[in-house]
Image (cartoon, rainbow, N blue to C red):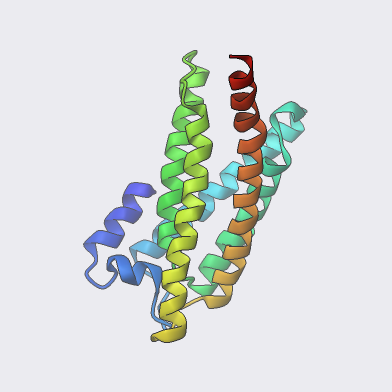
Length: 189
C-alpha cells in the first residue's frame, strides 16, 4: 500500500504532492489513489478481525484500550475518507502503511526469536506520523479557507479529532512504557 500510494502520488501529473493534500471540491472517487484507499480500508477490516480473534482467544493481556479503540474506530474513519472524498487521505495511507511495515517487521522478528532493540522506535514512528499529519493539515486548511477549497472538509475534521485522540493515547503509552523505565534506569546508575 505504501509503495502503491507513493507511485500513484508521484506518477500522476494531476495528483502531485499538493493535490494529494487538497483535492478539488469536485474530485471524483476514482483512479489509483481511491483504489489504494479501498485496499487500506480492507486492511483495517483484517486488523479489526485480528483484534476479535485475540478477544475470542481470551488473550486479554495482549489487549489495551489503545489497541481496541484504534482498531474499532479506524474503520469508521476510513469509511468517512471514502464517503467524503477526503483530501489528505493519500498521505494518511502512505504514512500509516509505512509505520505498519515497520511495526509488523518488528513483530515478525520477535516471532522468529529475534528481539530487536528498537521497539521504542515503533511507537516513536507512530507519534511522528500524527505530528506530520497535523503539519500537513495546517497546509490543507490554509488552502481550503484561503484558496479554492478542498474536498471532504467535514471528513477532515473527524480525522483530525481521531488523530488527536490517537496522538494522546500513543504519547501516554510511550510515557508509561519507555519514559518511566528510562528515568528509573538513570536513577539506578
